[in-house]
Image 1 (cartoon, rainbow, N blue to C red):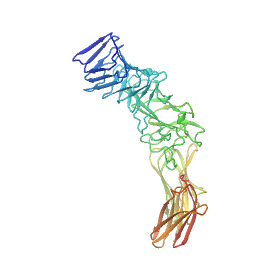
Image 2 (image 1 turned 45 degrees about the horizontal axis):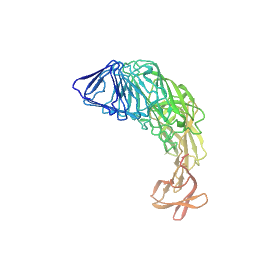
Image 3 (image 1 turned 180 degrees about the horizontal axis):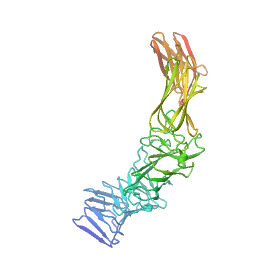
Image 4 (image 1 turned 90 degrees about the vertical axis):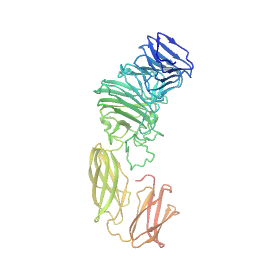
Length: 524
């Protein structure tokens, strides 16, 4: 359909465009209850050149094919608010080179409706009174943002359908931006996936004070049920010293929510998840789960927001009350997924004493640190405490001085306790004696996948390191070249099965030292 002037449809029902309808630059004006019906799987509506539609309040365009908006210059397909579009076919898409500003958009028929272009709008351009009717259909955001400009509670309706926001990336682009403007009240973002309805509900108790204010929400399950990828900006979820190498967090539900607000507000939020996304392990699945958000550290205490029992089937939900700060959200069975983010822990000699130093990138509800010491790396005793920083997203560093327990290796372990008496223990470190142990050879093992050979060599020389299993069988031999003076060499045991081994160090066939070690993927 091409015209240099407007085409006026008044109270007219046009049917049977089975091969589609191309608006090749015409200005189509609807009057009264005018309707256009485009049927068939190839019954697309294509808008191009400077084509546009001026709808009436009761006009309707129904199509079984795709909606394609390819104007030049760019426009949003409608010149004013009014009427609506009904997608009544099977699998259909809303795409083109430009987004479309729909007034009313109704989804029906079979198959998934897919957004194929970013920033489509439902609700109108000026009156903001249009409605998105999902009905029984499924709308896949497909990595695109959908704007809902109508602030009314009923701006999105559904019966059994839902909207898919599942894009597995650190920054989820499949978002619903709902312009709540200055309105209070409860609104449902009707998300769902794989036949499960998992809505996000935002009940605004203190509204935003701006006529263009919005709240943008997305949600996604995590790939392979391992909490990955973490949301953009999140630097930790549990502890870098707890070796969940695939990124999985045993205390956190495998779903993320990203909530962004353009202006200040206070609201209650309800987060829904599938029971299949509850992979909390036996240490963390006995209590309640609650919501935390990331703001340079994990906040706040679950008990301050509300919590609920976790489900393992069907759909579960948690309501968090009185929210005023937003960002990435998770549901966790801990008061915080990480009370302390430890970024370093080391020990150095100061005279004959050992000075322990550690730094945290953030702390949440942190009360104090306990310093524990051991002569063998197995049995630890507490030797002192250092006060924590409470809740902070800034870097803090600490020191503690203590005496070595022997002239060999002294092992240290750091334990953090929060103000709710919950604690976590960080990985063991080993420190060689600060005394003069002459030409003694020491073996330092923290129970991981490597160990250290410490040797104050009287001259340059070669050493042989032999590893035997518990049956006395030789399983590995390594040659070392050391230089005069202090040497600290790490030996990788990553190719050995987890077990108990005996390490012996020889020089010129003379055995210098033998020590039992434990090789494990989980450092103690």
